Image 1 (cartoon, one colour):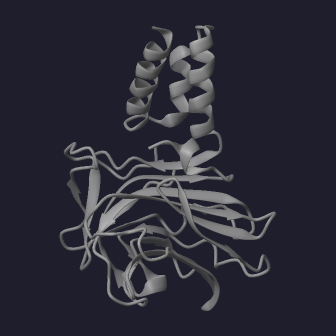
Image 2 (image 1 turned 60 degrees about the vertical axis):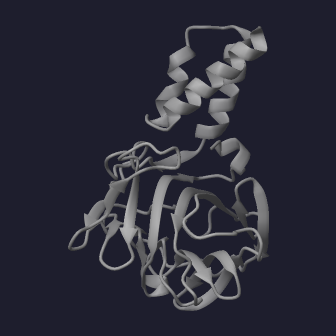
Length: 256
């Protein structure tokens, strides 16, 4: 039953990844040398290579890989809630009015620079605002924003600007998102060598856009969850498992 055993071990290690610093998981089987262990190390290695920031949001908003810890703001602030598996205190809910997380403005650049490849991945569940100019579920100052919008249909939008000038706007087509308050895994890749930005919902590439590499977004601003200045405010949303890589990673290799 080697295949069944390997499958169960993969499931076990993937569960561990949801709760621990991903960079330490490979140590679990470092002393073994079976074929199964090599397969497991390959799988986990693909998920963790180049991972520079990881906020599992299990009870707090600390960065489990880097040092970009997030601070809660608002009268009530972000509240812990159920994640996509129904586990309590394993995701954060933002009320769209007065709750958000933010990094320290002096803590460093969360996504390197606007002229380097990166991958952004997160699980989100929320309300889709009926305008393009609505709130932002997460972003980086006036440069990068993720948005749930309901302009002509339910869509996810990821866009960047440079000093207010639009550079890239990736919008999922109608029919990919079908309901409010359902969990969706979003992945955004910024491929600098090929000047291309890709947006994935689940494992599906839903939109791709070529950008001008000479117009990166403004860097050095705080990274935020539940709010973004680029879109003018907050958005009702629950966020979980936020990851940033300094390379291009497919959703399949991230694992979810």
